Image (cartoon, rainbow, N blue to C red):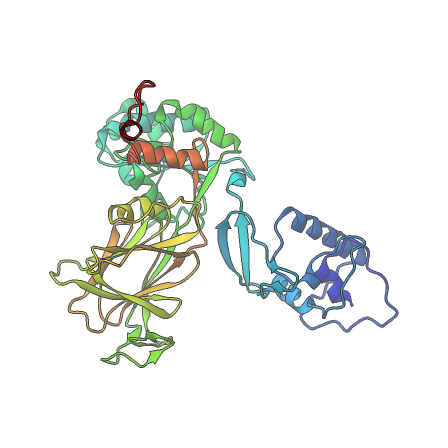
Length: 477
């Protein structure tokens, strides 16, 4: 039939059938395309699918090679049609080779049209511009007088030489060192200013340039709760783990970025929701279900989302000013995993694995690894080790019913607030990563940061033995 032929995306022209055409469904648009136009679109879709990796579709829905024998299997056109017309899909940004979905001659993964995996090879993550960039956001570390002159040089270069529209935070322009400088007055008058929390600049910025330490990149991430423009970070701060560029060659580096074809690291973020009064406590644990104790009922109609934001580094839940241990329950996709008793728990991205999580004893994960790390803070159990869960799962943290005190939560060190009984924190992987521009490539920049900033595996090498000296064990024998 017509629908099965379109969903199979065959390169050959469909043969005419002697049967009468099927009636047009009510959901079909009134303006139908000509058969020639539909064939051209099918060919272009097939070529586009050949360039990308195949979706999770059964064999009957994949395009068959010329001369390949077609098995008599039931048509899955409805599955493919749902995959093509479904308006809402939950996309997982996984990085690496696309896994095979068929195992042996008869086993395969059950197709799910509502969930699509997008596999991205790290080597192919290159920056390109659909249109030349025009608006540039410059973020400078405040309360640091050593960055005033680099900030002036960069703004003068972008405005005068590159003819860019430069956006700067209003409190940065209001610095006394800039307002009293008459040589910078002409440039200062051409800067576009904004205020955090009042002006929305998320839809007009093409490129972000950070001057400072890692905190400037975290601040840039907080300004964009949706899609984030490419971020170019210069190392002018104390640590600089996320800032790979040196400011001495800023003109050459910025010019290369404007030309495109630069390596990009997609730093995943966490989508966090704080829901007040969502869990209705019963006063005692419920019955055991599948080996897990459910400490409360979840009412989908109750609860109020008081905060929703994107987090680049970590979500930290701690005991706050109380002297008692914190006692929180950790759920994964609705099932109770464990109770955390200690100073708290850290839920971090791979980018945040080298921050607070590393200080708490967690492993360091490359930012291209799709994962969420859960790290306890001084747990009251010697066997509680940090764990890594797949990206895309939903974590939920609640205060245990028998907890003696409340807990506190912070997001990248900001917006700290108290969590009481009945409140919950929902955390999952965001579909809006931070595209961080690499100085060299994804692998070299990360390992160089480990060595230069954290002094990873830095030690004095063992001296080489002389050729005439024999092993002591050999002499004894």
